[in-house]
Image 1 (cartoon, rainbow, N blue to C red):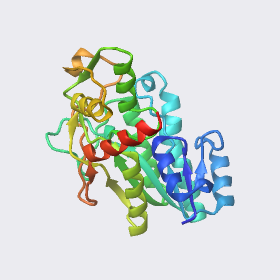
Image 2 (cartoon, helix red, strand yellow):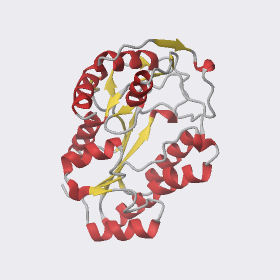
Image 3 (tube, helix red, strand yellow):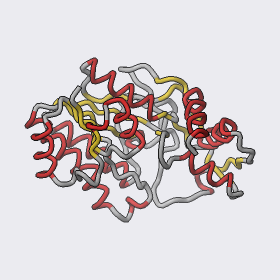
Length: 273
C-alpha cells in the first residue's frame, strides 16, 4: 500500500509508520493540515492509495480558550485532507474520539448513537467528522478511546507522578476503553483492506474507570503506590468530559482486552525507559 501518515509523530502515527514504513511518515513540521494548498500539492505529488490522518489538536482543556486553533486543526484540517483525497483519488482514514458523545448513556456507545459533544475539543472533532463526510471522498472514520502507546499518555503520567512521590488522586466515575495504539493501527489497516467506509468504532475489549486503569498501570510496571479514587467533581477542569466514554461497535469486533495490551506496553516500556 502506498500510504501517507499525517501526524506521524503521535502515538498512533508512530505505530502506523512502524508497519507502513518510514516513507509514509509525514510529521507536522513537514506538512500542516491547516494549509489547504500545501495539503493538496503534497497529496497530488505523492499519489497515495490511502491517507491516514492522525494529526489532531488534543489539548482538551486548553481548547476552551483556544477555540480557533482547535477548529483549524480538528475541523478545517480534515476538510482540507478530505478534499485533496477526493481530487486525487485517495482513500482517507480519519481518526476521531469518544468525546463526541456526552456520556449520559448507561451502555457503551455504538456508531448509530447521536453525538452530543460537551467541550470545544469535542465539538471541533465532531465538526471534522461532518466536514470529511460531506467532502465526497472515499472515507473511513475510526472513532476510538483512551489511546496509549509510545509518547506522553495517561500511563506515562501516572508512572511519573508515582515515581516522584506525588499523590495519585484519579477519577473513578469516568470510564473508557483503554486502547493500545499498536492494536488500533492494526485494526485501521485491516479495515482499509476490507474496504470499510463510513464510521467505525475500534476500541479494546473492556471498559474501566481511570482509577482502576491507573492501578493496573502501576501493577504492570512494578511500581508501589496508592491510588485514591475520587469523583470528577473533586478534580474540576475547564472542559467537561463524558462520564461514560466507553465505545462498542456494530461493525468491527473489539480489539484484544485492554489489560492484555497494557501488559505488552509495560514490558516494552521497561526496555525503553
